Image (cartoon, rainbow, N blue to C red; front, side, top):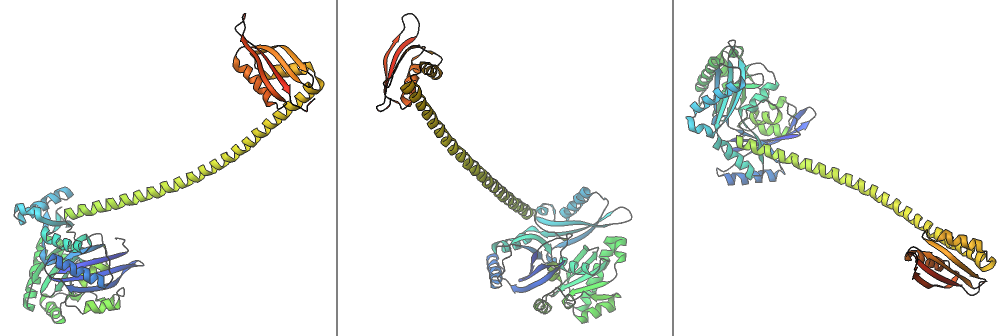
Length: 462
């Protein structure tokens, strides 16, 4: 069974359009609203009238089932010597070509269904055919009204749905709409065969019913032998029902009326039972949903609907991926922001630590110079300090300590940057007012530089 939240059915019957809407309620469907109105023959005028009627009821259906009159379609019941699906379809299409005079078969929409098998292995195949132009005209009318025809079927399907709810046995179903009649042989929830005709008198109606049943029996063979009861729906009067029962020798019953079906809005029940067209066709398609149905959807429309569904899925997938990527990016940005915050905190801590270490180094160096140089004048400590802070390529040859005045040193270095580093070291100590390079030259014997530096102590230190 199909699972839909609601369904809207548009049924065209001459210049009258009938519309019904059902809604999902529990495990079944509730017939919420139905109405009918006349439309002008021009497509644009018909579309405007449909829009006006829907707007007055605040309806905005985007998709609907399109139902067409059974009288506009041809029906055939074939007995084909095969049970292979592909072979059956090829033979059925060949029959359609013969029925429609060859080239015009391209302009025909058909529905082919296997409805049974006989004892000899043959397949009973039911075919419905309709001119594609007739179908597309109604499809365009709905499209101009802003409605997509999701499925195209025949009015017969509604009465079949209605009958199938009350039993799957084989029976004959006679539906009436004004002066038009449709007799179908129904079995296991599907239409086995169907014949449409007109009859203006009770005698003519009985004659057409007998002729149709005889044709069904010849076409279906033994399968039709199980069908005996005749069910009525639509606008058949009580007098006609009694006349049919007396002259056919059959049990003639009416399908259960809307009064007996509780899943119908009371206002809808009163409206449908008061119409000349009856209710079985339109209400049957709106209330009961089946996967097996008469399908006359044109191939072009079917392809269009398939592409629309594909685009809808693509949009959903695109939106889904967009939401997923957005969520991931938000989570990543939060994680990165947290990492950056932690790194900045660590960087600030490291900067504070480096500043503290630098200040402690300067303080240690200052205390050393104050103690070793300016007060005690320990040559050994001063030598150790110079050799400990100078680069490996620097060697001292002479060191003079002037108590309370400063120091001077001479030595050799493999490169000039090492000498400059020594000057910076003395300058950064903060104990000397003047640190200068008195001499820097190239050694005549070795490929080294000789230097002489001096540093005066700041005033007030002794």
